[in-house]
Amino acid sequence: MRIIRTVAELRERLEPERRADRSVALVPTMGAFHAGHRSLMEEATARCDVVVVSLFVNPAQFAPGEDLAAYPRDEAKDAAVAAAAGVDVLFAPPVAEVYPDGFATTVRVGGLSESLEGAHRPGHFDGVATVVAKLLNIVGPDVAFFGQKDAQQALIIRRLVRDLDIPTRIAVCPTVREPDGLAMSSRNGYLGAADRARAVALRHALDAAAAAVAAGEREPGAVASSARAAMAPYDVEPEYLALVSADTLAPVERLEEGGETLMLVAARVGPARLIDNAILTTNGSR
Ligand code: PAF
Image 1 (cartoon, rainbow, N blue to C red):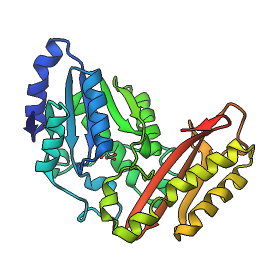
Image 2: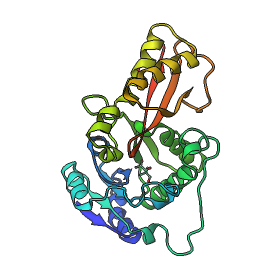
Image 3: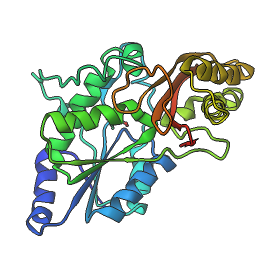
Image 4: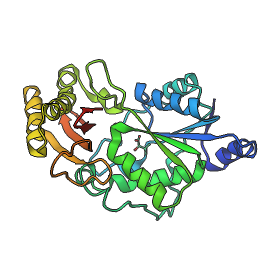
């Protein structure tokens, strides 16, 4: 596996692959790899001939006061994980390569970026959309891989490539969980033992919502109440807990038979801000 730091070198590395008509995958990341990242890399190596993983802690997606400085960074360890997963190129540019002096462009996906995470993290999705648009332009992948854990991000990126006619397929892979159900996240490392035990509250909220729907509940307010009640024993208060359309993120008025409702939850647990989600259907959840 080669570690590349500049756009020019990356394009030079990929040029012969393109000429040979080999398919290229991109797995965009901010590093601190866990099993969730590994599953994206494995899916990418299974589906494409050449796999590029980008490792860039993107300052533009951290709102003022967020954890940019504290965000975990260990490139040597990440490189070993990526190499073991069969990745061909680790693209790890410095900030000045991505945002050179005079950089003045922001990509904003209207509507979808404004609610939920967008409402709680001002500017976050503009930073994500801008860097992802850049990475897609730099790498020109056939397929780019993202995790369902960041469900709103995945919807925004699908809209971005559609609206800007970017010829990349977006693959969204299932959330990978710890044995007790906690969704894998680089931010789980912030949790001490007591907060780690409380963090399962998010998963229990999703399970309680799914159980309420399975028992016949169709009113979003009542489903959300079951979810909140499941978090209470852990002393975890949701920042938001929402039942929305899985396509538009618009709040649902009623869970339709056979339809899909996206339930999203965010909560602060000690020093970590965690998010999770599930697709609720009237015949089961995932
Ligand atoms: O999901 C992430 O890790 C980041 O938001 C992404 C997509 C790599 C953009 O910086």
